[in-house]
Image 1 (cartoon, rainbow, N blue to C red):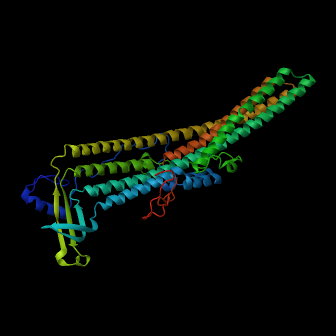
Image 2 (spheres, helix red, strand yellow):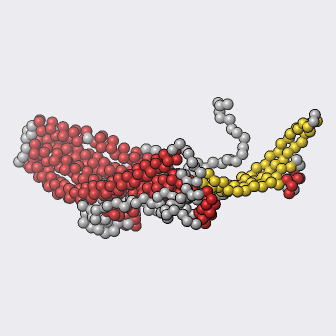
Image 3 (cartoon, one colour):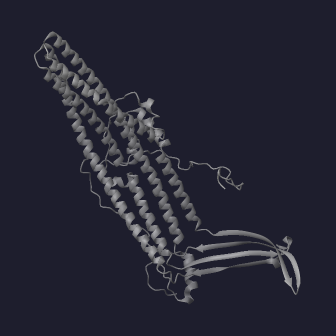
Length: 501
């Protein structure tokens, strides 16, 4: 049989009527698919990061459980609690279950369907003025199978499979964000507590200085102005403590909610201050191409491109003829005992062909809409990749610069502390004015507070870099457990809602 010269990946529906059966036979044996098989997601990436010179490979194993490098067992416990009970994670697992169920539903479209029926009727008939009353019993089976000539159902399965993979990557992305949020909030909490403690310690020191000025005032070696300024300095420092305590409380509330509990649930657990957790090692950043596999949001975006491509192919297949095989067998009798007799049994089977000659442009419009959706998913993938690259570059710059800043701030604090001690000693001996003491204490407090904030930024920048590189929870998360387990779902009396009809 001679067919027009067409690409191997396409099937020609415009054939002569006398060749339809032969063509259908070949298609049944060989199978056929229409529409695009894949959409290229190749993206031009830089060879190296601008903010780092190392090119050590970054893998899931390397980035797994990066927060343990911060050396805080309580943080490790909070992360585990959050993964187990966070509501966003449980919502993401529910979406995974939904996507997997939709995939099973799509697979069902490839299989035949079989339905059974049975009926019993009581009827009265009239013939030549006489009436007769009798019963009619009927039972049978109907079967149908849509032959997937042009791959529409297979494409639906392909799209559903890609959607399920995307939902699993979305779950990984939620876990990545969650772990990062827990670590960041925990570091900020410890920073707030350190700043509260610093303010209280500084205020006590300033109160001691105020008492010293009063002693010197009584001795006639200081002025009332010095005492007033000392009291004002202590009051100013103390006035900033409530603001810091508000931030501390809000961090506790956030951590409680992130772990799936009420806002104040962790107040007792987190009340005792601990040192700000700082990273002990530098993260291996790898090369930019690593983000394509390490970042779950990039993986999810790539799978959605595949999903939209398969959906486009399914829309293309709808433009072609469809063939179904249908069959039925039934038996009809006036008595139940006669239903099995051969004279009461009827059957039928055969193929049916449906050709979409005119649909008012509906099918073409649906195909074009799917093509536009595919374009959107591809552009979303490219935007996700660019965002990932930007996240890493920003985190690299922030991490390296903040470490250098923290080192200089530590040196400044040491110098200001020596200056404060010296000015206080000189003031006691009467060799300097109180203004020098006040300025030295104020400068020391500012430098120590700034150093604490810098250490918090050092840790949170490390967290941001780990997130940007795709580091997150690597252990299995059970996505099969439903939130609601229904009971008594079989046939049962309908319940009347309270107050309803």
